[in-house]
Length: 354
Image (cartoon, rainbow, N blue to C red; front, side, top):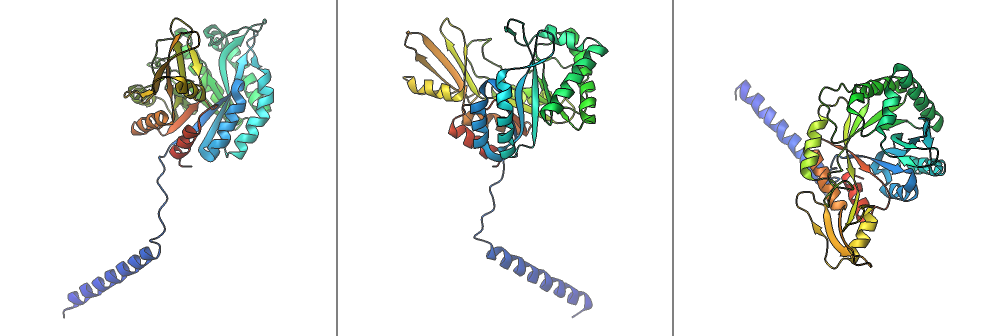
């Protein structure tokens, strides 16, 4: 046998021995099934001050599935200063305790441009308020100082800015405010997340690097329209594509629950639990819409008024998340916790791999 053949034979024996060893090791653990793969979804969620108790119950049921929690609780008074409701004082320690027990990694305070007058009446999504807050270097600095002081004093890990319906003329100053606020927060070891409306025209706007951005993937139908789903798969794909223009970490916000449209009456927002209760009173089973995955049905109330209801359940949310994942978005925010049914909580845990 030549020297080359001896080397080839030795190499073959070595390979066969290694293969036998690996086969034996595999057989020894053959009865141990590998863990099921995670969908790769990273969940965050909101708890609102006006519904914090059922929100906490849902958070407890979700266990370690929620990695980030935003407390939707900061508004403005008639002097353009941060304002908190009575529910906030009661809710904060309970929400923080539940978040700690659930393994939440980051808890943010959400500030929204709703303004309360001296008489207690509220103006929701006040664009003129934002105009005043971002108008000058001095006004922005004053606003930033109050935000930083409030977040530090309250023990949050950062802040979330949810300023909606902003005048087009103020958008450049608003993005400047975002950058200035981020620098101040970063110096204090705090984080910043910014909520983006789905209809915002972002062309020509210079969003700063550093903050994370969450796009509202809902409001396709609602109180402003006739009956329909809060979102559909096409909307989610389009918004995921829009998110690519933003720097840094990005996520999509999906909305649970639904709306009730009475014939000739005012549209009412529904939690999933309430929508499911109404579905039980319907003479026909809810139907699932192919384009959105949402459920819809009709019912007649005690006064003889016909209603149309559209809402999202666990299957709807799972479908929306799959569409987002296919579009390259794995960070999902849930608006909002409170009165989710057990099956939906189970689906969210599964999607988060918990």
